[in-house]
Amino acid sequence: MNNDSKVIDLYNLPFKVVGKEIADNFSLTNRVTNGVWPSTYSFMPHSIPDMAATVDHGPNVNVAVFRLAGYAAECERTFFMEKPTKEEELHFNQMMTARNIMLDMLRPGVKASEVETKVRDYLIDQHLTTNILHRPGHGIGLNNHEEPTLSLGK
Image 1: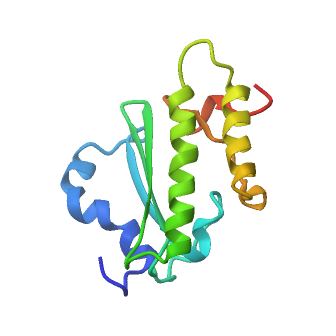
Image 2: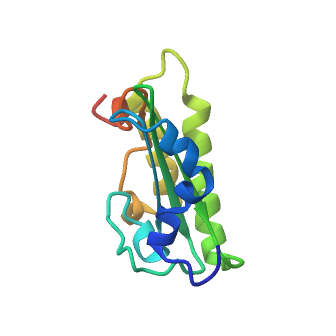
């Protein structure tokens, strides 16, 4: 990947790397989708980036979605093409702290609303209230987004 990489090039990357395996196992229920949201889009989790957009220094988000044998999985990662600025590094670390708060709480008996409350409280303490765009998490298994959701209403 280089600084001239386009969203469409990275969308096609899995097919270049494991194209034969994808083709050999393709069915209506099996698929692999990879997308990169350049920094100009990455702050909106459900936006659709322009396929001709160039991946810039970051923060960029890679989203890989899999459906295999009727089960779903996804993997999302933030990456930088250059050393992040101090502000970007601060925000990345805040995101990772919020993620760790969530992961540390995931266990039987803990209400989903308690998880979101604790994560939101941390983000509010960090003065990031205008940056709260999404719930902390959701279930995955038969679909990529399913119950339970880690949200105040649950």
